[in-house]
Length: 138
Image (cartoon, rainbow, N blue to C red; front, top):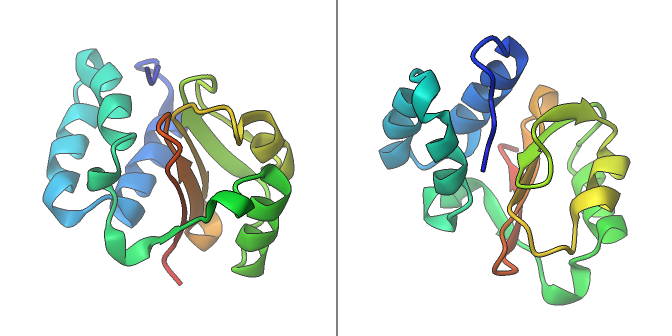
């Protein structure tokens, strides 16, 4: 469940930008609508953690052998990811932090999780079924 307080401008702003950058065009308006309704914010997380909501033009699947925090960090930094990054998911209620730390805390736990480096439009997405993607607008 994604938790966003009504007054949490930073989380709303990051999430809105993530939707613009990496959500499939056919799904963007629905998620922006939910984002505009504070009572419906919980629903956003449920949608974001289904891969059919991602824009496949910007996803790169990660092989099982590479699904560990150190390798994902290496792959992300190779395409320009820098800290700080923002995260949201099941265990992380949304905070800004160092990329390496965020990945160490969340990768490999079969949880729904996103890390987003807004300044360079790079991210990482994983869900509870074990699917993982590097996201990049580059």
